[in-house]
Length: 429
Image (cartoon, rainbow, N blue to C red; front, side, top):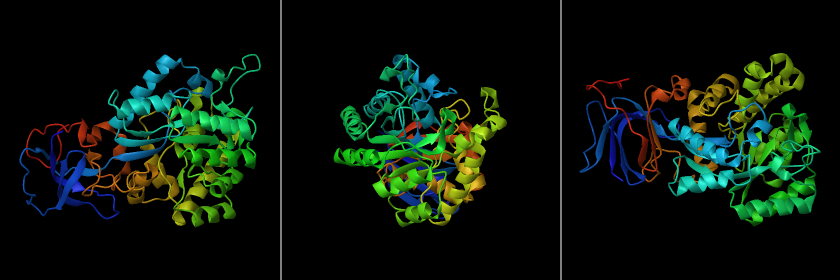
């Protein structure tokens, strides 16, 4: 692993301040030195280091995706995702993992797998170098109830292999399910505390008993596992806070009590709302039969309005909102994840600075690597992006692969920067 010296770059270090011109030295897999420089000034060269003249490009931390489904296969239904044969499915996951890294997502938090061990196998393969991908936390299947979100078995085909989720009924079945996923080696358990209107169970409906939720959380924590919840309904959000469920996906329908609870415990929870799912389901899914008229009848337009209002309220209360939009459906394809940052600015009222922080500095704690990930600072892991353009001026530049000039993970280039034709202040196309 060669040392790398970035010079003449505009550094966004993740601390919330304006970028500054400087040089960054990477030694091994860590950032060894960050030096502010003035016009025409550079830090002293380092013997043997590869020199990357950034020509004024934007250097920032690698991004963290908080709601990732590698095994969602860009199809229009849960059945179409789950019915993919396992051999092809694992190859799909490997390809998608590379796609995320290509687009600058150097860390991802698994939010559920379509088959019991897909996430675990992909995480392990990334870690041992078998495949290329971001840092990854592996999730279980979605835990659900008979007839709930994720139970797609038919009466004449009752085999559990035909279910999108892991179906349980009662506290002891829940205990066994959690223990089984712990045996498989997941990092987190995913539980569907509320419905999802596209499946026929309204988003505001909640499906588990409080006893079942309690057993899930207690058993997961006994095995040292995190719990994440699909929680659109107000009751499910409150259960997340009450039960200590750290990761809350969606959180669309809130009341003052729910917001007060979240604010009181705001350093104990992460919110990944999945706005891309709501926005694109409402407005960009007609090709798959989900016209605005259909999705309005399903209740998604009303939910989008509620979710935006909830996220705006959470932002004002300092509750952490992170990117992750349920990508991997036909109308939210993998690789378009940076749309979340645009949506945060457009719908939630975040500044571009806040949106960029949500994908970088706030991601370190989400990955449980808060002291070493998410900043361009000495001693931090060298997960870095070199960008042609200024995301603080135009957050959409992060949606274009061509504008992400280089991707470094753990001190090594996944995508090395292009060679410039001359000593100019921008990169050659």
